[in-house]
Amino acid sequence: METNSETGGPPRGGGVAFLLAQLGAHATTRFAERVAELDLTPPQAGLLRLLAATPGRSQRELADALGLPPSRFVPFADAMEQRGLIERRRNPEDRRLHAIHLTARGEALLGRLREVGMAHEQAVCAALSAEERTTLQSLLQRVAAEQGLTPLLHPGYTKL
Image 1 (spheres, rainbow, N blue to C red):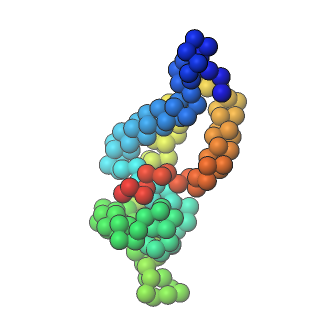
Image 2 (cartoon, helix red, strand yellow):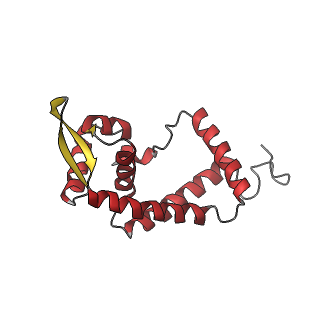
Image 3 (cartoon, rainbow, N blue to C red):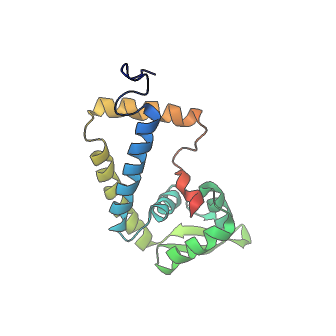
C-alpha cells in the first residue's frame, strides 16, 4: 500500500479498507432512504429479490440463505405476508412445510424496487465511466470472494 510520504501513514483520503467502509456506509444509508419511499426496509427488499430468484423455498431454506435463525425469520415473513407481498403455500412434496412465493402485489413492488436499485447504482457510480465501473465491480467481487463473503447476501441480514 502506498503511504503518505509526509507522515508514513495511510494515503491522504484513506486507505482502501477505509474507503470501502466509508462508501459502504454511505451506499447503505442512501439505499435504505430510497427503499423507504416504497415502504420497505433493505432486508425486506432483499427477501423480495431472493423470492423472485428462487420461488417456493421453505421458511427454513430462506432463513438459512439469509443467515437468520428460523425464530427471527418467521415474524419477518409474517409482517410481509400481512402486507400482501408474500404468501405461504403448502409444499406439495411435504405438507408439513410451507413454500413461500411472491404475490402479484409483491411482484409489482419488486418491479418498482428494481427501478430504485438501478437509480441507486447509477447515483453511487456516477463518477465512473462504464468501463471503470465494470473494472471496479470485478475487483470488488474478487476481494469479496477471497474474504469468504456470500455473493448477493448482505451481511446486515444476520442483524434482523
